[in-house]
Image (tube, rainbow, N blue to C red):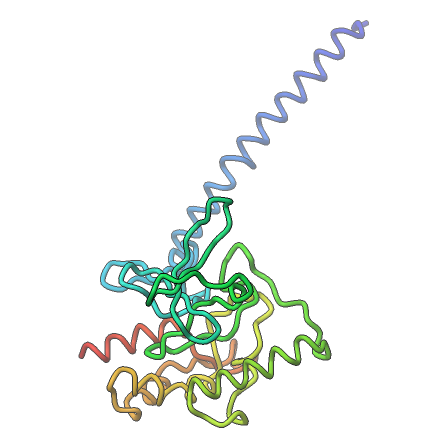
Length: 247
Protein backbone atom coordinates (compact mmCIF):
# COMPACT_ATOMS: atom_id res chain seq x y z
CA UNK A 1 0.00 0.00 0.00
CA UNK A 2 1.38 3.38 -1.01
CA UNK A 3 2.23 5.77 1.76
CA UNK A 4 0.52 9.19 1.99
CA UNK A 5 3.82 10.85 1.12
CA UNK A 6 4.34 8.88 -2.09
CA UNK A 7 0.72 9.51 -3.09
CA UNK A 8 1.18 13.26 -2.66
CA UNK A 9 4.38 13.11 -4.72
CA UNK A 10 2.62 11.25 -7.54
CA UNK A 11 -0.26 13.75 -7.53
CA UNK A 12 2.22 16.64 -7.54
CA UNK A 13 4.20 15.18 -10.46
CA UNK A 14 1.00 14.47 -12.41
CA UNK A 15 -0.13 18.07 -11.90
CA UNK A 16 3.29 19.38 -12.90
CA UNK A 17 3.25 17.29 -16.11
CA UNK A 18 -0.24 18.55 -16.93
CA UNK A 19 0.89 22.11 -16.32
CA UNK A 20 3.90 21.74 -18.60
CA UNK A 21 1.92 20.04 -21.36
CA UNK A 22 -0.89 22.61 -21.26
CA UNK A 23 1.62 25.45 -21.15
CA UNK A 24 3.28 24.17 -24.31
CA UNK A 25 -0.03 23.55 -26.07
CA UNK A 26 -2.03 26.61 -24.96
CA UNK A 27 0.77 29.04 -24.15
CA UNK A 28 3.11 28.36 -27.08
CA UNK A 29 1.70 26.16 -29.84
CA UNK A 30 -1.82 27.63 -29.97
CA UNK A 31 -0.76 31.32 -30.03
CA UNK A 32 1.90 30.61 -32.66
CA UNK A 33 -0.58 28.67 -34.79
CA UNK A 34 -3.24 31.39 -34.58
CA UNK A 35 -0.65 34.10 -35.30
CA UNK A 36 0.63 32.19 -38.31
CA UNK A 37 -2.86 31.61 -39.68
CA UNK A 38 -3.79 35.26 -39.14
CA UNK A 39 -0.66 36.47 -40.88
CA UNK A 40 -1.17 34.09 -43.79
CA UNK A 41 -4.90 34.68 -44.30
CA UNK A 42 -5.44 38.23 -42.98
CA UNK A 43 -2.00 39.78 -42.81
CA UNK A 44 -3.14 43.39 -43.18
CA UNK A 45 -5.89 43.14 -40.57
CA UNK A 46 -3.75 41.12 -38.17
CA UNK A 47 -1.18 43.92 -38.21
CA UNK A 48 -3.75 46.59 -37.38
CA UNK A 49 -4.80 47.62 -40.90
CA UNK A 50 -1.96 50.13 -40.94
CA UNK A 51 -1.89 52.65 -43.75
CA UNK A 52 1.38 53.83 -45.28
CA UNK A 53 2.07 56.72 -47.64
CA UNK A 54 5.45 56.91 -49.36
CA UNK A 55 6.82 54.34 -46.93
CA UNK A 56 5.65 56.26 -43.84
CA UNK A 57 2.93 54.96 -41.56
CA UNK A 58 0.16 57.54 -41.27
CA UNK A 59 -2.48 55.67 -39.30
CA UNK A 60 -4.92 52.78 -39.35
CA UNK A 61 -7.97 52.42 -41.57
CA UNK A 62 -9.84 51.06 -38.54
CA UNK A 63 -9.08 53.84 -36.04
CA UNK A 64 -10.02 57.47 -36.53
CA UNK A 65 -7.71 60.37 -35.85
CA UNK A 66 -7.78 64.14 -35.61
CA UNK A 67 -6.53 66.39 -38.40
CA UNK A 68 -5.55 69.51 -36.49
CA UNK A 69 -3.39 72.49 -37.33
CA UNK A 70 0.25 71.51 -36.76
CA UNK A 71 3.34 73.53 -36.02
CA UNK A 72 6.64 73.18 -37.89
CA UNK A 73 7.63 70.47 -35.38
CA UNK A 74 4.56 68.39 -36.24
CA UNK A 75 2.96 69.03 -32.84
CA UNK A 76 -0.67 70.28 -32.78
CA UNK A 77 -0.93 74.03 -32.22
CA UNK A 78 -2.88 75.31 -29.21
CA UNK A 79 -5.32 78.22 -29.06
CA UNK A 80 -7.33 79.93 -26.34
CA UNK A 81 -11.09 80.39 -26.55
CA UNK A 82 -10.63 83.68 -28.45
CA UNK A 83 -8.42 82.10 -31.10
CA UNK A 84 -5.05 83.45 -29.93
CA UNK A 85 -2.25 80.90 -30.21
CA UNK A 86 -0.58 79.80 -26.99
CA UNK A 87 2.42 77.68 -26.07
CA UNK A 88 2.35 75.06 -23.32
CA UNK A 89 5.19 74.61 -20.87
CA UNK A 90 5.61 72.56 -17.73
CA UNK A 91 5.61 74.63 -14.55
CA UNK A 92 7.83 73.90 -11.58
CA UNK A 93 5.01 72.28 -9.61
CA UNK A 94 4.31 69.75 -12.35
CA UNK A 95 1.31 71.58 -13.80
CA UNK A 96 1.03 72.99 -17.32
CA UNK A 97 1.25 76.75 -17.89
CA UNK A 98 0.45 78.62 -21.09
CA UNK A 99 1.89 81.76 -22.62
CA UNK A 100 0.72 83.67 -25.67
CA UNK A 101 2.83 82.99 -28.75
CA UNK A 102 2.72 86.59 -29.98
CA UNK A 103 4.12 88.16 -26.84
CA UNK A 104 5.02 85.61 -24.21
CA UNK A 105 2.35 86.93 -21.84
CA UNK A 106 1.10 84.26 -19.43
CA UNK A 107 -2.43 83.05 -20.02
CA UNK A 108 -4.70 83.71 -16.99
CA UNK A 109 -5.49 80.54 -15.05
CA UNK A 110 -9.22 80.99 -15.52
CA UNK A 111 -8.76 80.79 -19.30
CA UNK A 112 -6.57 77.69 -19.32
CA UNK A 113 -9.54 75.33 -19.49
CA UNK A 114 -10.45 76.81 -22.88
CA UNK A 115 -7.11 75.94 -24.49
CA UNK A 116 -7.52 73.41 -27.29
CA UNK A 117 -6.29 72.40 -30.71
CA UNK A 118 -8.05 73.59 -33.86
CA UNK A 119 -9.08 71.55 -36.91
CA UNK A 120 -7.09 72.17 -40.07
CA UNK A 121 -9.42 73.57 -42.78
CA UNK A 122 -7.35 71.86 -45.48
CA UNK A 123 -8.40 68.39 -44.31
CA UNK A 124 -11.67 66.51 -44.08
CA UNK A 125 -12.52 66.25 -40.42
CA UNK A 126 -13.78 63.21 -38.46
CA UNK A 127 -16.75 63.07 -36.12
CA UNK A 128 -16.28 64.01 -32.45
CA UNK A 129 -14.59 61.51 -30.16
CA UNK A 130 -15.24 61.12 -26.44
CA UNK A 131 -11.64 59.99 -25.98
CA UNK A 132 -9.94 62.32 -28.48
CA UNK A 133 -9.22 59.24 -30.66
CA UNK A 134 -6.88 57.79 -28.04
CA UNK A 135 -7.00 53.97 -28.53
CA UNK A 136 -6.34 53.57 -24.80
CA UNK A 137 -9.41 55.68 -23.96
CA UNK A 138 -11.96 53.95 -26.16
CA UNK A 139 -15.53 54.57 -25.11
CA UNK A 140 -18.61 56.73 -25.49
CA UNK A 141 -19.57 59.88 -23.60
CA UNK A 142 -22.15 57.97 -21.53
CA UNK A 143 -24.56 60.90 -21.87
CA UNK A 144 -28.21 60.02 -22.42
CA UNK A 145 -30.11 61.69 -25.28
CA UNK A 146 -32.09 63.83 -22.80
CA UNK A 147 -29.11 64.87 -20.68
CA UNK A 148 -29.07 68.72 -20.57
CA UNK A 149 -25.28 68.82 -20.78
CA UNK A 150 -25.33 66.59 -23.84
CA UNK A 151 -28.05 68.65 -25.52
CA UNK A 152 -26.05 71.82 -24.93
CA UNK A 153 -22.89 70.15 -26.24
CA UNK A 154 -24.65 69.05 -29.44
CA UNK A 155 -26.01 72.56 -30.01
CA UNK A 156 -22.54 74.06 -29.57
CA UNK A 157 -21.00 71.49 -31.91
CA UNK A 158 -23.67 72.10 -34.54
CA UNK A 159 -23.03 75.84 -34.49
CA UNK A 160 -19.27 75.30 -34.68
CA UNK A 161 -19.47 72.78 -37.55
CA UNK A 162 -21.83 75.03 -39.51
CA UNK A 163 -19.58 78.07 -39.07
CA UNK A 164 -16.40 76.12 -39.86
CA UNK A 165 -17.84 74.76 -43.10
CA UNK A 166 -19.90 77.78 -44.08
CA UNK A 167 -23.24 75.94 -44.21
CA UNK A 168 -26.62 76.42 -42.48
CA UNK A 169 -27.08 74.49 -39.25
CA UNK A 170 -29.90 72.45 -40.76
CA UNK A 171 -27.37 70.87 -43.16
CA UNK A 172 -25.20 69.54 -40.34
CA UNK A 173 -25.78 65.74 -40.06
CA UNK A 174 -26.03 63.90 -36.77
CA UNK A 175 -22.63 62.20 -36.99
CA UNK A 176 -20.92 65.61 -37.20
CA UNK A 177 -22.02 66.44 -33.66
CA UNK A 178 -22.13 63.05 -31.90
CA UNK A 179 -19.38 60.58 -31.01
CA UNK A 180 -19.50 56.91 -31.92
CA UNK A 181 -19.91 54.22 -29.28
CA UNK A 182 -16.19 53.40 -29.35
CA UNK A 183 -14.96 56.95 -29.85
CA UNK A 184 -12.64 55.55 -32.52
CA UNK A 185 -14.88 55.31 -35.60
CA UNK A 186 -12.78 56.20 -38.68
CA UNK A 187 -15.85 56.85 -40.84
CA UNK A 188 -18.23 59.75 -41.41
CA UNK A 189 -21.41 59.92 -43.43
CA UNK A 190 -21.38 61.03 -47.05
CA UNK A 191 -23.52 64.01 -46.00
CA UNK A 192 -20.88 65.17 -43.52
CA UNK A 193 -18.12 64.76 -46.10
CA UNK A 194 -20.08 66.77 -48.67
CA UNK A 195 -20.60 69.81 -46.44
CA UNK A 196 -16.80 69.94 -46.03
CA UNK A 197 -16.04 69.97 -49.77
CA UNK A 198 -16.09 73.75 -50.36
CA UNK A 199 -14.00 74.46 -47.28
CA UNK A 200 -11.34 71.87 -48.19
CA UNK A 201 -11.28 72.92 -51.85
CA UNK A 202 -10.91 76.59 -50.91
CA UNK A 203 -8.08 75.91 -48.45
CA UNK A 204 -6.17 73.92 -51.07
CA UNK A 205 -7.06 75.95 -54.16
CA UNK A 206 -8.78 72.98 -55.80
CA UNK A 207 -11.90 72.77 -57.93
CA UNK A 208 -14.85 71.91 -55.61
CA UNK A 209 -16.29 69.63 -58.29
CA UNK A 210 -13.09 67.58 -58.32
CA UNK A 211 -13.10 67.29 -54.53
CA UNK A 212 -16.79 66.33 -54.57
CA UNK A 213 -16.00 63.62 -57.11
CA UNK A 214 -13.25 62.37 -54.81
CA UNK A 215 -15.78 62.01 -52.01
CA UNK A 216 -18.12 60.05 -54.29
CA UNK A 217 -15.28 57.69 -55.19
CA UNK A 218 -14.67 56.92 -51.49
CA UNK A 219 -18.22 56.16 -50.41
CA UNK A 220 -18.29 52.63 -48.98
CA UNK A 221 -21.47 50.57 -49.15
CA UNK A 222 -23.36 49.05 -46.26
CA UNK A 223 -21.78 46.08 -44.51
CA UNK A 224 -22.96 42.88 -46.23
CA UNK A 225 -25.19 45.09 -48.34
CA UNK A 226 -27.76 45.86 -45.65
CA UNK A 227 -26.11 46.62 -42.29
CA UNK A 228 -25.49 50.21 -41.24
CA UNK A 229 -25.24 53.18 -43.61
CA UNK A 230 -23.01 54.17 -46.47
CA UNK A 231 -19.89 55.84 -45.13
CA UNK A 232 -16.57 57.48 -45.97
CA UNK A 233 -13.21 56.61 -44.39
CA UNK A 234 -11.69 59.98 -43.44
CA UNK A 235 -8.04 58.89 -43.49
CA UNK A 236 -8.30 57.24 -46.90
CA UNK A 237 -10.18 60.25 -48.29
CA UNK A 238 -7.50 62.64 -47.01
CA UNK A 239 -4.74 60.49 -48.50
CA UNK A 240 -6.50 60.60 -51.88
CA UNK A 241 -6.92 64.34 -51.46
CA UNK A 242 -3.18 64.76 -50.93
CA UNK A 243 -2.40 62.72 -54.03
CA UNK A 244 -4.84 64.74 -56.11
CA UNK A 245 -3.34 67.99 -54.88
CA UNK A 246 0.15 66.79 -55.84
CA UNK A 247 -1.08 65.73 -59.27
